[in-house]
Image 1 (spheres, helix red, strand yellow):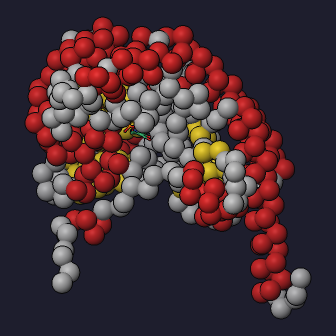
Image 2 (image 1 turned 60 degrees about the horizontal axis):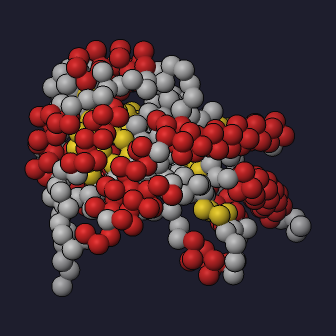
Length: 382
Ligand SMILES: Cc1ncc(COP(=O)(O)O)c(C=O)c1O
């Protein structure tokens, strides 16, 4: 007997998480590997957060506060907005489909850039929404193209800024112009998961005050990236209170556990840790950017854009699956994207150096393979 799932799942992509380190070790007989595939913080969680998490362990026999009241109050103070504008979730991985459950009816259009975080598409398809993808413009989000794709069926627009996986960003000016042009019944989600890594002066850091003029704007933030708490699972949205009320109806009731909220509260107050993370990541980003640029001057077919996030996206002339495997063999896990793209999370300095070595070797293996194939095609044995 075949048990059928809902029809929409036939076209719903499965989320593929970064590869498990123990499995890579096992497969290639390696002892030392580095994981640069899930945009995590290379410094790990702050000590302040781990201490705070340990302190609440004895209370884990009780259900947590559904609103994570103490953390919510701290965020409200930190982001200078009323508490009723804030809703926490089990990471943004929970919030994104919850937004779709709250706002998408079957057949409604969910509008997004062609290359962006896959969860927007998964969330929309699960609700039988129509996913409309707007082509990128030279790896950047084409805001004008997105506006031109708005129809009377559009319900939600996803903007990831800086964008995952390309690392590109758009300015505050561009965002405000975009918001002014979007009809007010359409939700605009501005996913700011990587905002703390930005250094561009015109990046829209001050988005909270925009909520006054644009009640259809939703801001998404997470403790998984710059705050180093990916394993704890805690993120939040800032929006009009009515949106908070609606999403709360479809979000898990006890979504954020006490360990996660205690860790997040401590991390939020640990500004020295955040500064340190930013320093390490920005130095690593400068190093990798310069190294890849140099390489692109020597090896043809390498394309990349400068990144504002804690990862770098590169395209080469070799299949991403091949390069991915070649680097895995050397104990370096990156993320293959599409046919020719790779996304590399910025690591600690020694990890970045190791990545560059592995990348060069993988490219050399690609060139060698291409050469051999050419010979085979011509009937010449190499
Ligand atoms: C753009 C973007 N949004 C949201 C998330 C999910 O973050 P969280 O760990 O809070 O679920 C990610 C994770 O990689 C992401 O890249």
